Image (tube, rainbow, N blue to C red):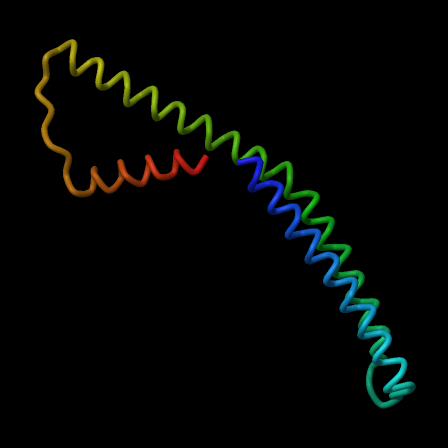
Length: 121
């Protein structure tokens, strides 16, 4: 899972760097090719607004990090609880000599999804 976090961080850093580069190139192109376009909104102002949007994106990203960590921890606790419950049910079935009925199609699908989900964590 650590690799996923590093990958997400690197992707964010690349996007951030790309935005910086785009902003720089646009400012340069506008200043050299369109010195004063009075009839329309100033493109440099638009680029400054882009900077503000980028800043808000960074703030949201910083706020999201602890939420994502808490979500992961909660998922881990839920999976651990479900796993313990399944083990307890199996033990009870063994102790009471209950014959297990085959799983329905829906139960098999749910079991596979749960196993897949737990392996992703």
